[in-house]
Image (tube, rainbow over all chains, first blue to last red; front, side):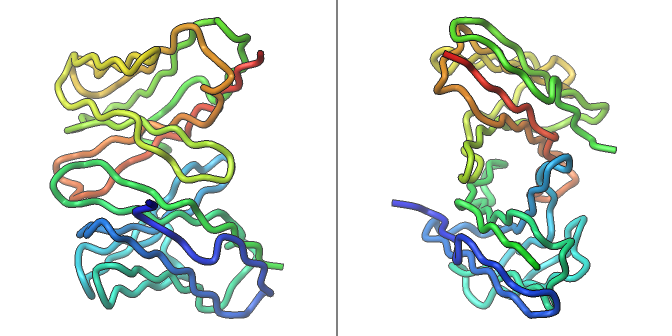
Length: 112
Length: 112
């Protein structure tokens, strides 16, 4: 029973196209996060949410936007994909009662 | 500049050997988590340490939080091929909301 799922798991898209990645959680996490993971850079925070319709920027937010219309879903949108956004994207959740984050399985995005 | 420095970045050892991974910072953390990530999957939480000087054991894995809560170590006894993966440390700070600072990771390979 996966608490956090991501879709799609793999995507190839062309430069300039919009892309939306979906994160769905069944754990009632209050906080949700989007990270990207690249060789040599580790996990970098893109955006996070601290409640429905409450979001804020992370350290690498340029070119990305997010939305959270309900507790369960956190969407990451690349308005106009660029090759530098080729990466593996992870969603994570946190209950708000402790520091631990729980991660989804990731989405591998390739921008050609 | 990463707030959390992990060392070594890469480690290749034979089955049965012992190893230690370090996570160091000049910042004080309210808690520190260790995660393990396998290829194609998201990071999975192994342990959280909260108190300075705390030692936690998880089978063959021993985690220690430094007295000043600025550093941590992960020691694996008699490593097995199943221990292969990317080990990540992540620190939480009191003034950083529910966000974590991640180290760059240690990639461990245990050869049979």
